[in-house]
Length: 86
Image (tube, rainbow, N blue to C red; front, top):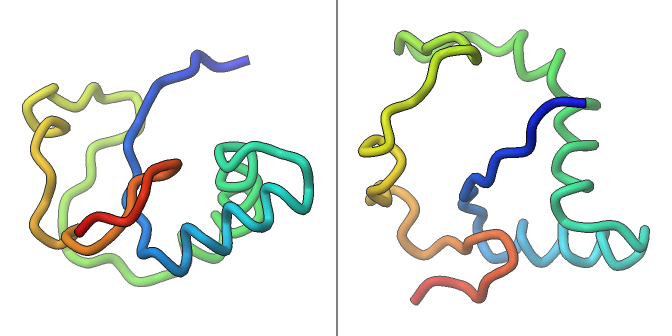
């Protein structure tokens, strides 16, 4: 089993509510639902064209400072398990 890492993901309010509703319906955690959705969708996502950005391989550690600031594009979105951002 791989090592667990805490991450923060931003979702719009509607997507977060739908994910939470599905987690309740299946009696699973939101984390479990997101992981299952990724396993199902990852091949389709990988077929999408790239944005032209260079993405580091999964084995590469991301510097802490890159994770500490919240991008402006997430304003008005929610954190998993938290209330919508005002």
